[in-house]
Image 1 (tube, rainbow, N blue to C red):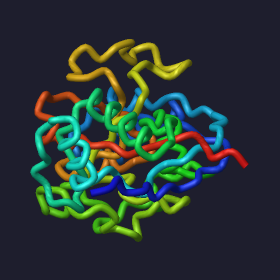
Image 2: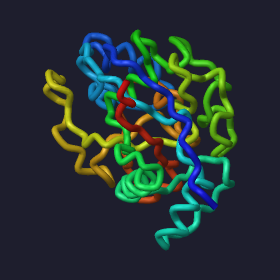
Image 3: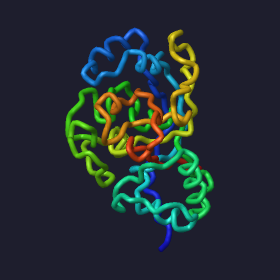
Image 4: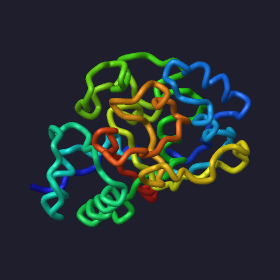
Length: 247
């Protein structure tokens, strides 16, 4: 079986309104108080900063179990347990990075990699400061999160109305996604934001939330991490990124 081509979405260079204004963090915490998330977790998003992000490519959907199965067979890793069209979950960061290199070699595209955190947020948020990939209001049924009650992954791309402004799918819910970015406070962050997250199982930032998570993790600005060792239970997967194709 050959390696499948990636359905790349071209993200143009542009300005990302990254994060959340410090003066709005308390209001955000109140808005999502029912999720039980403390205000301290939201302070990691501050301050709001305009960041120029160069053009890049990102996969329209996360890597699936079927795509991962090819890599697993080639490298002797365990076969995925999910249906072939569902996102692969339970993937350690290094294994995800290894997959990127493996696939890039086979596609003749050595730049295949995990997205940086700013790239991920740019692909989810577009040119404005929207709260969710699809807009400013949360709507049940636009992402596979805990409110749907499914309790497991769904086929990638099952929620097309939840697409980001660039047409990227599953940027909220289904599988939490690794980025290449190590956790650190944003420059100018509130003084009480921790410099490290020693309680995290892995120091890299994840984005987007997974099927067992609440709507707060669907927010474009929400910075998360792998805080439990059982990466399948918390739904950690990944999607691909690469530099823009030279014109």
